[in-house]
Amino acid sequence: MSTILYILLFIGIMYLMNKGGMGCCGGHNHNDHTYEKNGNMEHHYGDNNMNNIEMVKDPVCGMHIPADKAVTKVINGKRYYFCSETCAKEFENK
Image (cartoon, rainbow, N blue to C red; front, side, top):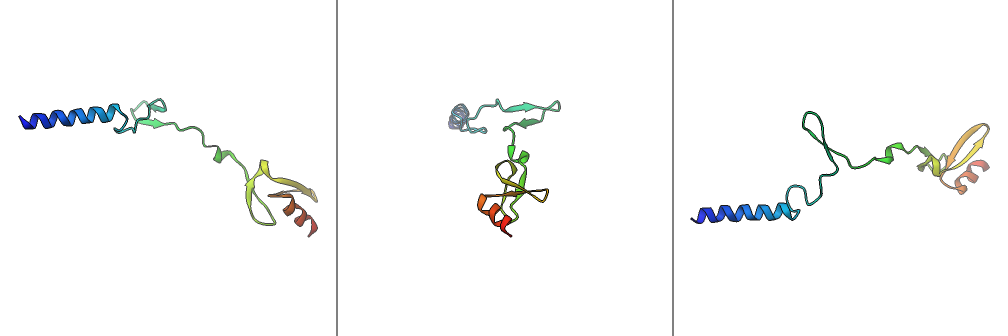
């Protein structure tokens, strides 16, 4: 009789954990999951925009910066990218 009570208690605890979000999925919904034809589950967490950003190196201080945020100067027909106006002026003065 006590074995049956332990089994029922275990089932009840597992039910409450799963319903309350403490089970295998930590309470998140499954809207971000899709399934492939072979049944494997894929997770979609959004696009990683970091892979799409062009990074350039400041020739003065060596800092890497996004190209669209850099200070740009064209000197002798070549485009240079700088982290700041200070580095750009220092480069121009050399």
